[in-house]
Length: 127
Image (cartoon, rainbow, N blue to C red; front, side, top):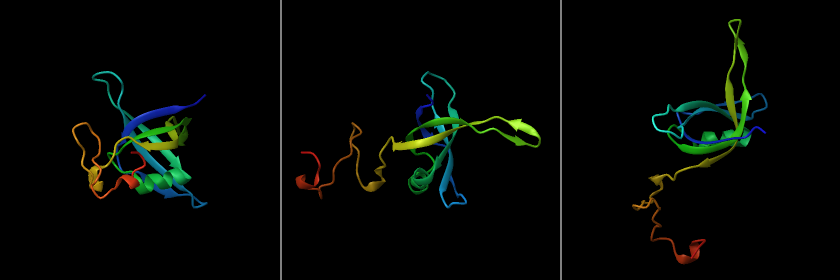
């Protein structure tokens, strides 16, 4: 089984390209912390294709914290006559790990978003 799941922050703006068949390809770097004190951060190459890449292009940028699920693949190639060995994460699914406060919501001390007064009980999916 080849399954990889991690949470991290995007290190730099994703690079988006379109292939011959006009399908999107997004390449970006994910900074993933380790679970113990004073451990170095891992910087991992991540690739998304098609609709997932279009999602990356539209919503993700440097500093955003996300959860990614995918597989690890070899990305070996030759450069200047020498074999280069590299791994990359092929993303199958992405989820946001934090909310953005730029949408005019305020956060209380517990980290929960405050609902604006303009919403009535009938508009909320829970009550």
